[in-house]
Image (tube, rainbow, N blue to C red; front, top):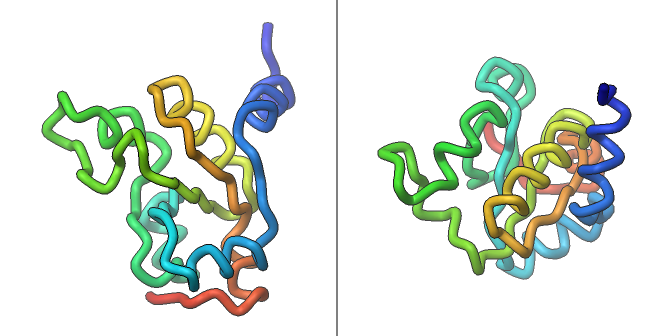
Length: 124
């Protein structure tokens, strides 16, 4: 039987994580697709990355699959995807799912608080 720790170790083994400062630099350079995987209630409380796609972790498989009516065109197999959540756990787990779906350039950028602290642009 797997524990939450097991799932996190598996996800962290396949989804690289960068610092918030490096993520802000990638954002400022205009590179990649930024995705907040928290639910809308959490985003309503804190805001999110300016221009980020808001795709709750629970919808990721449907939104990433072009065969579903929920597909988001921003999620392309060759895109550089940068995932954020509250602390990095949900982003890692969502990133592992995307990797299993054939997305190769998926990066965990950790938690939104770190993003704000690093001076990353935000919106409500």
